[in-house]
Length: 431
Ligand SMILES: [Zn+2]
Image 1 (tube, rainbow, N blue to C red):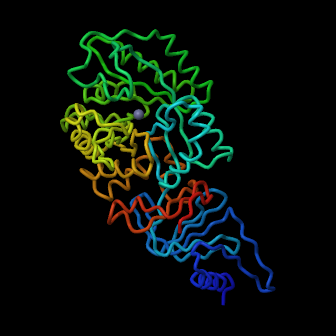
Image 2: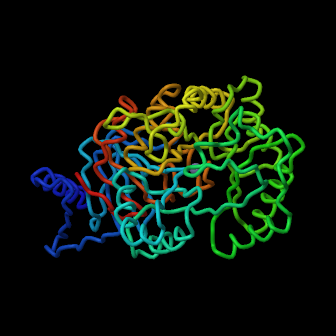
Image 3: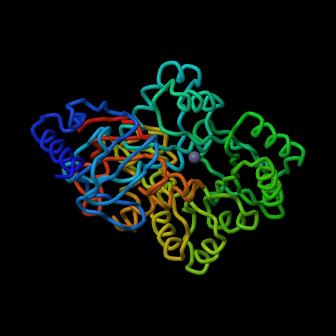
């Protein structure tokens, strides 16, 4: 009998005999010398693999080596030094990507001291191996460093900072700015907004680059004869000159259409103020700019007290409920027009809950199959990492979630996370 095959059978038998299904197994060679497990080599077997490119492999196996996926297939043989994980027929899919999140809450220094570690663990336990912070306090850079250097467990972070492109009249209100967004009629300014001097934009982008951010973000509410689009073009070109990405919040149909000519790197929200026509949806999709879903911000979620809550987990602003249906419908129209659509929640509360709420909002107009595409290849492309993450293919990062059940049959099986592997390292193990 082929020795490797024999050891594979023996290892499989050992696994079944063992109550802990994730036990490591080391092989013996003919001389009875134990081969030590190399923790950087993980072999997942007996898996139902959602590759992320539309393919599903039953009875599949995935080999992870040195933080990368090295093989995906069926009936592969475990290397002798591998840690073997018997998936027991469960779903294995790419690690989840949150494409729009606000990570740090309250006083940033206190949050870093008291909450950061638990918060990062909450993302991992919900299955998120990559998170785009669409603006947070500057402490996000230190958090990214700590995670990258292994001082704290957490998802890979992509970080940005804010650059204004116009000055809207003050609203006089405190709290989450999304509650009184001036993109929303009748509060839209009708006079031209004041311009931000070019040098201020140039310096702000320079500062972002110097600080080590990955991107800059702005908010656009166009005003008649106002400066927003010219300033946005400057911001985008300055960002690109420094090798940064430039992302734009444009939540009304008017604003989403207006920002296209500046060619930002993605649109951080689905427009949800006003209904898109099919023609407008086609215009936006044809611009080739990816978009994040963030539907759950505008579709209320009901908490344990049966109160509708907003993205900040505070009571829902009733006056925006009138646009709750437009996000899901506009998202679907854009999808049918061919947009690259990514998963993002724009929320700040418990990641597993925000995943659930975004899934609920997406499921109004998208199938399980489409939502999986959005969460894998769609989001990876929308955050410019399609060569590194988003599918289980050789050469990509070993970011993997093992789920109880099959999310292609029941979407909410995405909430049943048993194991999370980030960069080849097991970071959550509830198998
Ligand atoms: Zn946001």
